[in-house]
Amino acid sequence: MSKLPKENQFFDLSDYGRPIARIIAQRLKHTAFTPVHVTIGFVLCGLMAIVCVLQQYYWAAAFFLVLKSILDAADGELARIKQTPSYTGRYLDSVSDILLNLMILITVWYVTDASLMYTLFAFFGIQLQGTLYNYYYVILRNKHDGDKTSRVFENSTPTAMKGEKQRTVNILFMAYTLLYGVFDRVIYHLDRKAVESQHLPNWFMTIVSTFGLGFQLLIIGVMLVLEMKHLIVPFFIGYSFFIFVFIAVRRLMNPKRTVPHSNSQ
Image: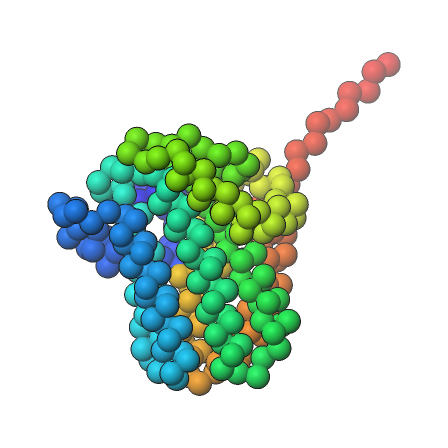
């Protein structure tokens, strides 16, 4: 099941694991496994990837990073198939992602000669990249009656859905706000008019999807396998420049509409 109507679907480069994720979700449809169980599975895959990097098993690390991305898609697929969307799953997924991202980059720093300061810059860049992609994607979903467990503005605690506890939602939303708040504010400040966009074409979203977490993890995995781990930190710092490029392109496609002034005689 897609998050968007068919006519608004785009080729998502970060979502390469979706076909396998759908198979996994279908296999789990009539089992006791829940989306949260799948989320825990991708957390374990992320931790296994970290262990493999520390042990210099880079092919294995790449495998677990890709598997993590597949399971990251499978939890949402399972929620849609079982018709059990939840804010618990949505925020647990996001909180797990950002903590794993930080741990993965710290691990890269540990096994290379990278500067810790530059590593933190790379982490900040990765998060801003992912936030911009999600910002545009959520705007698109809300405009076209797509999946709505994600909101354009995460500025208030949502009401728990059927089957989840409000207390759990409150705790996870607090963690989400603490971890993602600064990135959301920065991206909104850079492109606050995006919510008024009339046109986010499929080709544009495909390009921006290179900022998606799945694609980021794939790049890290490829660099590890190619013995280019020392380039991971500088790559993501440099690639953050395209945040401004994509915002500029978005603005050009959706210029501000000006109200003509009437000349009164």
